[in-house]
Figure (cartoon, rainbow, N blue to C red):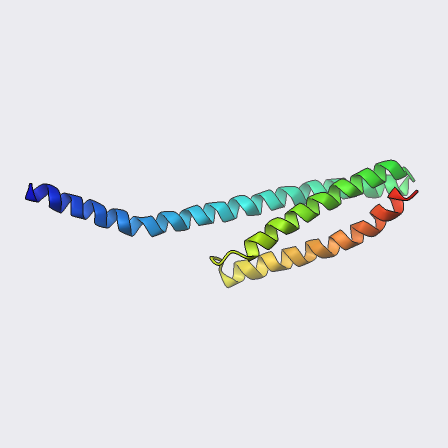
Length: 123
């Protein structure tokens, strides 16, 4: 019986020491998943905005409006993901700076796309 309790003590000690590492791995996995989701939205926005620019140059106003709108909505979603990531307490300074820069660039792009979107949608 004494041997079982000492084995149980060791198992509990190992379990308690591993738990923070598993929580950290889980947070890292969640961070990576969110980052990848935002990256996918940005790629989609890029293709939509590129198509919107092509339609705009050919004066296909309806198509340009739709593509710019789709691209802008994807950028807004990506920005919201970055914003929630920045609110996370568990992030290195380098990661926070990187996400902050991405978020700022996305917000600037949203404003630029909106001007063309508004112009093409009003025609």
